[in-house]
Length: 113
Image (cartoon, rainbow, N blue to C red; front, top):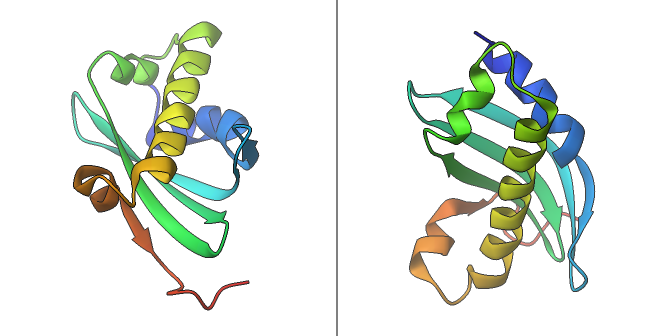
Protein backbone atom coordinates (compact mmCIF):
# COMPACT_ATOMS: atom_id res chain seq x y z
CA UNK A 1 0.00 0.00 0.00
CA UNK A 2 1.35 3.42 -0.97
CA UNK A 3 1.15 6.37 1.47
CA UNK A 4 -0.63 9.66 0.81
CA UNK A 5 2.78 11.33 0.49
CA UNK A 6 3.89 8.65 -1.97
CA UNK A 7 0.83 9.25 -4.15
CA UNK A 8 1.30 13.03 -3.88
CA UNK A 9 4.88 12.61 -5.09
CA UNK A 10 3.81 10.51 -8.06
CA UNK A 11 1.10 12.98 -9.11
CA UNK A 12 3.15 16.12 -8.41
CA UNK A 13 5.62 15.03 -11.05
CA UNK A 14 2.91 15.42 -13.70
CA UNK A 15 0.78 18.19 -12.22
CA UNK A 16 3.02 20.89 -10.72
CA UNK A 17 4.42 23.79 -12.68
CA UNK A 18 2.99 25.41 -15.80
CA UNK A 19 0.02 23.67 -17.37
CA UNK A 20 -1.43 24.94 -20.64
CA UNK A 21 -4.44 23.91 -22.70
CA UNK A 22 -4.08 26.30 -25.62
CA UNK A 23 -6.23 29.08 -24.17
CA UNK A 24 -5.03 29.48 -20.59
CA UNK A 25 -1.93 28.84 -18.49
CA UNK A 26 -2.31 27.60 -14.94
CA UNK A 27 0.70 27.58 -12.60
CA UNK A 28 0.28 24.75 -10.10
CA UNK A 29 2.17 25.66 -6.94
CA UNK A 30 1.46 22.47 -5.03
CA UNK A 31 -1.00 19.74 -4.25
CA UNK A 32 -2.26 17.73 -1.33
CA UNK A 33 -3.77 14.24 -1.42
CA UNK A 34 -6.50 13.29 1.07
CA UNK A 35 -7.27 9.56 1.24
CA UNK A 36 -10.89 8.70 2.07
CA UNK A 37 -10.83 4.91 1.90
CA UNK A 38 -12.06 3.89 -1.54
CA UNK A 39 -11.91 7.47 -2.84
CA UNK A 40 -9.47 10.35 -2.55
CA UNK A 41 -9.35 14.09 -3.09
CA UNK A 42 -6.56 16.10 -4.66
CA UNK A 43 -6.38 19.71 -3.48
CA UNK A 44 -4.48 21.88 -5.95
CA UNK A 45 -3.15 25.37 -5.24
CA UNK A 46 -2.61 27.41 -8.37
CA UNK A 47 -2.14 30.78 -9.95
CA UNK A 48 -4.46 31.48 -12.86
CA UNK A 49 -5.02 34.64 -14.90
CA UNK A 50 -6.02 37.24 -12.35
CA UNK A 51 -6.00 35.09 -9.24
CA UNK A 52 -4.72 32.59 -6.71
CA UNK A 53 -6.98 29.55 -6.19
CA UNK A 54 -7.41 26.29 -4.28
CA UNK A 55 -9.33 23.61 -6.18
CA UNK A 56 -10.63 20.28 -4.81
CA UNK A 57 -10.85 17.40 -7.30
CA UNK A 58 -12.56 14.19 -6.21
CA UNK A 59 -11.22 10.84 -7.44
CA UNK A 60 -13.17 7.59 -7.59
CA UNK A 61 -12.41 3.98 -6.71
CA UNK A 62 -10.86 3.17 -10.10
CA UNK A 63 -8.36 6.00 -9.62
CA UNK A 64 -7.79 4.90 -6.02
CA UNK A 65 -5.81 1.94 -7.39
CA UNK A 66 -2.88 4.37 -7.48
CA UNK A 67 -2.54 3.65 -3.74
CA UNK A 68 -1.69 0.00 -4.47
CA UNK A 69 2.01 -0.55 -3.92
CA UNK A 70 2.63 -1.67 -7.50
CA UNK A 71 0.84 1.06 -9.49
CA UNK A 72 2.12 0.90 -13.06
CA UNK A 73 3.37 4.10 -14.67
CA UNK A 74 0.45 4.06 -17.10
CA UNK A 75 -2.04 4.25 -14.22
CA UNK A 76 -0.19 7.17 -12.62
CA UNK A 77 -0.12 9.01 -15.95
CA UNK A 78 -3.82 8.28 -16.57
CA UNK A 79 -4.84 9.58 -13.13
CA UNK A 80 -2.66 12.68 -13.57
CA UNK A 81 -4.11 13.34 -17.04
CA UNK A 82 -7.65 12.95 -15.71
CA UNK A 83 -6.91 15.44 -12.93
CA UNK A 84 -5.33 17.85 -15.38
CA UNK A 85 -8.38 17.66 -17.68
CA UNK A 86 -10.74 18.24 -14.73
CA UNK A 87 -8.63 21.19 -13.59
CA UNK A 88 -9.00 22.90 -16.98
CA UNK A 89 -12.72 21.99 -17.12
CA UNK A 90 -13.11 23.67 -13.73
CA UNK A 91 -11.33 26.80 -14.96
CA UNK A 92 -13.42 27.10 -18.11
CA UNK A 93 -16.79 26.38 -16.44
CA UNK A 94 -16.44 27.90 -12.94
CA UNK A 95 -18.23 31.07 -14.03
CA UNK A 96 -21.20 29.34 -15.61
CA UNK A 97 -21.75 26.06 -13.73
CA UNK A 98 -22.58 26.06 -10.04
CA UNK A 99 -21.10 22.59 -9.48
CA UNK A 100 -17.76 23.68 -10.97
CA UNK A 101 -17.77 26.92 -9.01
CA UNK A 102 -18.03 24.98 -5.72
CA UNK A 103 -14.79 23.10 -6.47
CA UNK A 104 -12.65 26.23 -6.33
CA UNK A 105 -11.91 28.75 -3.61
CA UNK A 106 -10.36 32.09 -4.45
CA UNK A 107 -7.51 32.75 -2.02
CA UNK A 108 -6.57 36.30 -2.94
CA UNK A 109 -9.81 38.10 -3.79
CA UNK A 110 -7.98 39.81 -6.66
CA UNK A 111 -4.98 41.09 -4.71
CA UNK A 112 -2.40 38.46 -5.70
CA UNK A 113 -0.02 39.29 -8.56
